[in-house]
Image (cartoon, rainbow, N blue to C red; front, side):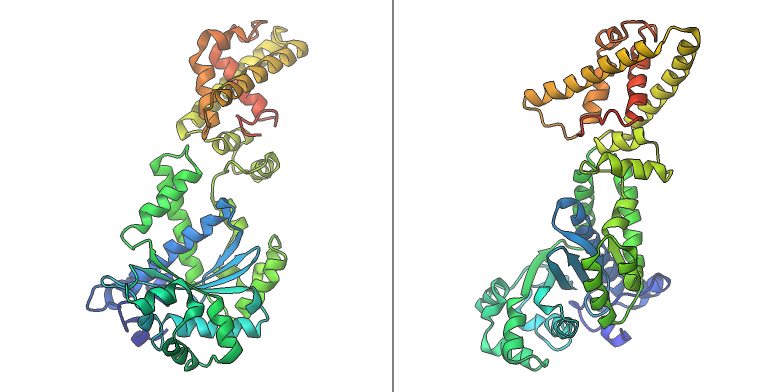
Length: 407
């Protein structure tokens, strides 16, 4: 991207400077309205994160590719999306503006041609994402609502970009324009709320740490590059084998994949026990910690559970050595504990309570009902110490026998 292009207008949000250039862009690449290429770059990265988190929303997102023809290319189970992202400080967006030479539509036309050459145009959609509102002029409202209804004047401009006849008709059918994207001033709050909704047990500090991690990954992907044709060919190959690392390798540096996101993020409710076992085997954390986080436990609750488990393990070692805890009494205690914990979750469900954070509910119900929890220790192997009884449940959880309300 040339310096002239980087500073050519308020609405131009393309280009992906590398991290080593960010300070220079922040200070030098500005226009009279105060919008800098650095601001656009960071805004794009933050919208990439918002799209990337769609992996957890069941939207079919497999990967987000930060490339140099489009600002974002999204690989989904049902095809591909190529998006141009545009910013502006004031005023509204018109059809005429986004159809200017060098602007969003011309770049999407170039993307359409590359997709056609790669044999994926029939599986592709082309989108303009606009910060700010659309114009209320009839030509704009109609074109934004249904690009296939473009006026002859708009079609004439697009023909000037080298797309005519059947190809022009097909492109317009595949085009979508989305205004009112999260503004630069609001996108952090939007993303933080989204992360908080996915992991409701996380504190604001944890959410912000995770957001920073994801932002670093998105900015690193933006700074990488591959030739446009190889991007589309690699996207096509990877969509056919989305779990294969080799399939993504030609564009891995600029791609934010499903697998990468999961490796950077805490467990979430849809993760299976097998998923968590694999993460525990890699040394990331104990199975107990991963299960608690998956079930919405807060950082404080996880720490309490780990301490209770550690103390229970010490006490259990002594009880086994003295004969107070026999294999039979331990099995009986396990059975009663699992029944009690399961009953707490079931009772909440029968009362119509939706447990977004079942681990919090189960753990603190057991810890708070001292007498009831202590009574589970019928044989007195923990001297009816309710905290050690809960710690024993934590050890049982670490053995893949209890999911803290997640089945």
